[in-house]
Length: 231
Image (cartoon, rainbow, N blue to C red; front, side, top):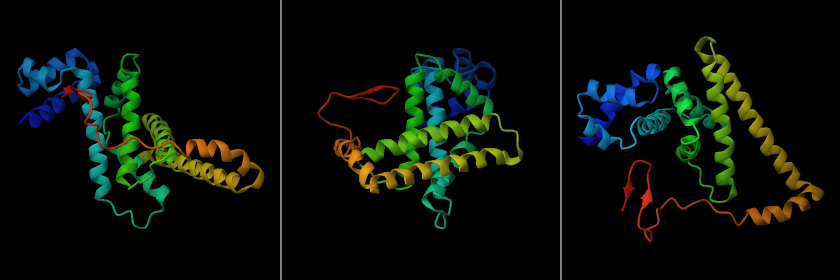
């Protein structure tokens, strides 16, 4: 029931966000519309409207993953699969004004770090859904590059008035082509006798970098999940 109430409260908030942003006004109006006591609403979202904005973003990640599972990607190259996932993530956003309000919220200094984490989390979710198994420096570089591609594509989409957002999908394809060229250039540099030797030392250093463990540590008193402290 708690999950259902949290979803109902978030759904009610979305009708107000385009006008009042992710604000206390929106939070109170959502509680009233959903028929949820304000104290209970605070229990569901202790951080208020900003916590709801986080939940809305993560809901989009879940919707993207669900649609990705329903898509036949067997005939696509790997970069095309990534581009498809990015496109699906953008398509499930739906209301551009809600996204603009979210971007305005996460542009504030006190919320900017969380906004960056959400963007990184979206890139991570895409790679995980596509079966990425990297556990070295590539784990970080893949997510950093994809965060840039997704972020730039979202900004382009916000101003795109072309039919079916065709211009956005062309922009996304160009960005993915750029990533492919970059990776091919790196490979050629490694194969070149001169540049390969120059890259050998930093390569060995970065080779010691490993991806973070997917299993939470159990030797610490708790971990931060974004909404509450878990013991």
